[in-house]
Length: 282
Picture 1: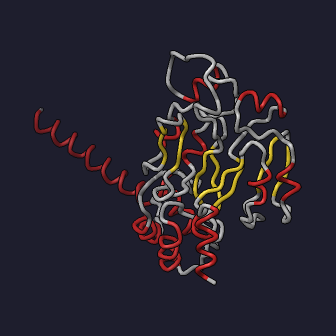
Picture 2: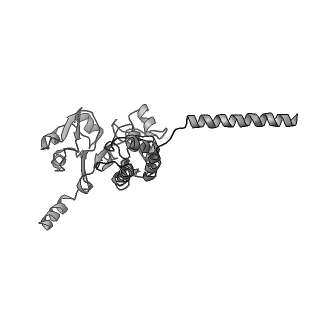
């Protein structure tokens, strides 16, 4: 009986193995070997900044696409995309460098606290409950949701100002922090020459008086910056000015025109140093 049982079980196992082999071969999916090669060229950050579920998804999309023009690995940038293009025998257009900026200047001096929150320290949760610890319902909550999702340590909470700030040298423009901010305060903007940028550091849509009362550096929708811009780069919508970085020529006339200092200018030399540098160049 033992021998018969062993033979029967062995026969069943053998038949099952043959059937499984036949089925696996019939339904086998051949993966394009270029996907693996492309994946090796990617930085393996799996940040999702490319818009695909990880580097494997992005690699597959690159192989299937007829052109790489609409595809970009924000972490690897041009260097990585050049490698991908070489592997796939495709051309890639140069994409302008971008960096994340936090559109809020409501530090402790400009935006005083009106209450104290004692609960779950998460921006997403707090934003569903109430406006925050200040009178401005649009400002940075500073509970670090953006910090937690950044895989590169490029964003942090400044303890002295109580605001999220970006380290430009570490930022890869993956966009994870943009998605994480429930107030929509973080934006990816083009890096100008020498990383210079000008943008409105405010997202308040309140009317002038109410906005100024809530934060001393709020945009009050006065349209002075819009009138000062000679290049049509500034528009005013819902009491809030916005600077189109594709049109902005970094002339800084809007900065001087803003009565509340709501417009931020990054990486510019102080006026005196700029004048001296220009004189030396001449």
